[in-house]
Length: 176
Ligand code: GDP
Ligand code: MG
Image (cartoon, rainbow, N blue to C red; front, side, top):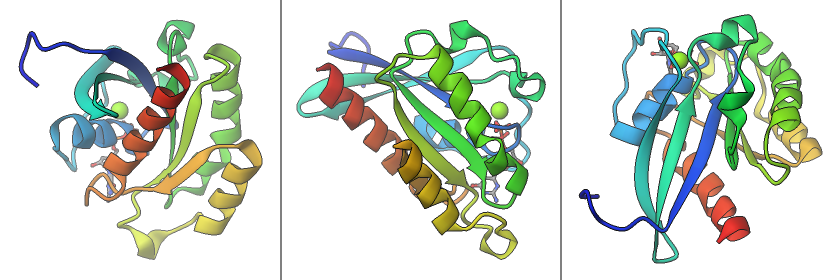
């Protein structure tokens, strides 16, 4: 969207999950339609934006990406402040990244808005041969915890758009 056009809503959405699950590439895919196989660890807290139209309103999504703090479990409360949505990401080929999801969820629920919209995201669905987390297990967990759930591939651009669209539309329903 060109500068100067009006924005009706700005929604902050945070990306969380273990290091190397693909958070930065999911964001690159959504914000710029880019993907890189040798993505550098993110330096400094940063966010990217993309403006889309929901229900004839212009909605600016401000998507925050962690700065490698996930390695030290040191994501600060400033990161979560004001977030209306979250993508809680694990890697379908790394069991440990799924096993850590309850901790991330607890941290998220401890810091964020009580109405926060959360999407559980199983990334790297293109690596089916290396799968270590079944779709069923993840779906069951998501249902139990009242989360949306999708498997994505930032590499193949599968379900990335869908994940953000779902979260943003749900935020829109709650806050518009
Ligand atoms: P982050 O630490 O969670 O931000 O993870 P990155 O976005 O930096 O990704 C970590 C590594 O996984 C990089 O080498 C990416 O290229 C790779 N990666 C990210 N998404 C995918 C995906 O959907 N499929 C595959 N095969 N690799 C991915
Ligand atoms: Mg990153």
